[in-house]
Length: 143
Image (cartoon, rainbow, N blue to C red; front, side):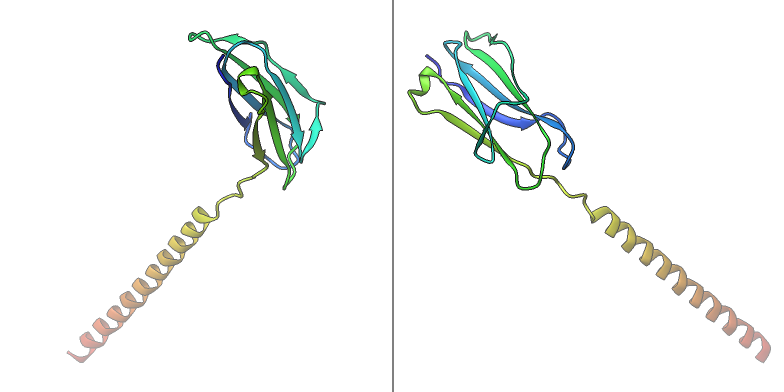
């Protein structure tokens, strides 16, 4: 008997309020019989769940995928629980939290600072150009 390894991840980039699919990938187990269940915020969920067929690997173990359609909301968390003989009654649970990356403000700030410095450089350059031009005219007038 070989115990399964489990990972959980979303299919697409997560956007709040936009339907997505979360994947529970179970791999490296033998014999090919596992029980997979889902929870959302510690409540069992079965609607929107699908299970792939067992897929053999080259090392004579198996893979299987379970998917769950979901619409992410801030603070939600999903768990995939796998039960297999080799786990000896200790189910394996992986949890995934809804964590939406906020757009980075770094590039915008950097662009703003660069633009400000550029305009400041033009203003200083213009000041010195005019001052130099005025001094040159004054010197020419005295000679």
